[in-house]
Length: 191
Image 1 (cartoon, rainbow, N blue to C red):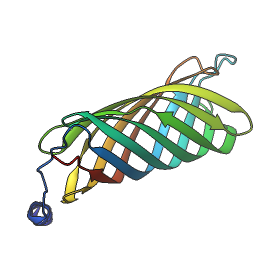
Image 2: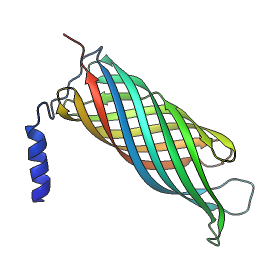
Image 3: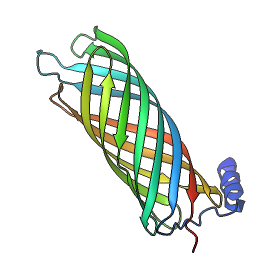
């Protein structure tokens, strides 16, 4: 507990920490990384069994946004993820398929920041999944995060996201929870 209090006090002493305000016309550029381990139940629809899929994901994310109103931004984002997947029959636990693959995603994030640096984000997107075959997904991501200003124009942004994806080869949509940490640079519009 003492460490948490010390970290908060240290962060509070940094210039601009917790004083988030971005005027219309400002820009934001960011990069982020994440590591995720997820487990899903998948029904492909052409067998009598349900599969349990375990994914280990290493991802990177880059975006650029423009503030269209005070503290509200829209942007363009892309991410690249490397997947290692093991799919098992749910009934027996026997491995049905193992694979390594990568995805490319493009999205249109919309963010709204509160004055304390908390933000919410919604981002519709399209994902191309490449392994031995290509699958296209439509997805929606909803996130909550915090822009901790470490300098007047620089923030560390921890973010928790929920993504729901729909693809052509699955009956049920996929659900993914992910935690990431990013670094953003903000270019404020001169008043």
